Length: 494
Image (cartoon, rainbow, N blue to C red; front, top):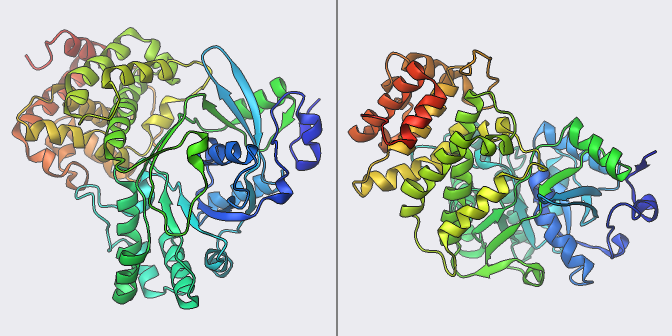
């Protein structure tokens, strides 16, 4: 017997899950959030739920927003349950469910006028984003905003009816300026180095295409704080929905599962105030970059490193990959030999201890995080999580045998079959050209490195070219497990 998740049923649900200590009817909107996916509901929304449970800052509730067809699907699912979410936090030794309620509305995607009106409301003081690494219109090779993207060009030609997140933000800011209302802060919560600066470049860059003077106003008046966010949050599917129903007796359209660990490091730069998130564990710092480099390169880089060998070995779950002695040893050697040595110092942090914590987190069997999730969107993730470390080592004249192997594993993965011959299903906007290049690279490794928008200057290094070619040939000739073992034994490339 299950109970449908709703405000009316919270009293019944509290027998199996923690419920909000605050009266949801007393919340008032203060934040518009674009991209109401699992990570947002397991991270930013959790911190706000914690804050509201203390009785503080009830005027900072969330209004959801989006622009994609999938956003409408999520809006419908959440609206049917009064915008509540069941969050199941899972450690290695325990699991617990809680109901979160910081969202009070969700704007219908596609209604630009309604979204702009909400953004122009003086009560909205922060606009936050989790739109994934691929949502910022970044040229992968240069790492800069791409003003020539068709969606950006279209918004620049019709700024009064925008279709992108950034076009909507610009229209909202313009409406506020025209009414003499202070601009809201634009706060990215995506895993991108310098995410605040990247967001600033996208908003200002798009505005400059149609109204350079307004772009200047944005540059001078709007805050875009950088942030580092961290919490492993797998995708939701029938498994997760079933666990919530069977173990907690709750009927939730789209629950969220996550690890117990969470972290949010944020620059304290806001144009119109902010909630007191420091009281619930958010670290406000003058400079986020050291924390961000640590997390993106050690954790996200680690994700990217194990995703493709695990997929080639037909391993489905992340914890199973880490239980494989060869894969785990490969990650440890890569981190200790090539990644950690080029990460700048982080205040009050031991980088090797941080990696040990990452290992523990990846070994958590309860999360159910999957290798296909880690392997998706590599054309955006590799240039952000792996190739910058490769570039740093090359610049310092240091070897990149392990990092070149990571790139070769990615190439071998995109040939389309695992070592056993099982077909691989791709989830990448550039899958077609990656697959074609990977097939050519079996005979000509440089065909994959010719994807210059991804590899950039790294592909020009003769050391990287040679290491990549040798690793790829070995993967094809001897298979993934043997290649990893050769690397562990110091014999790859001999």
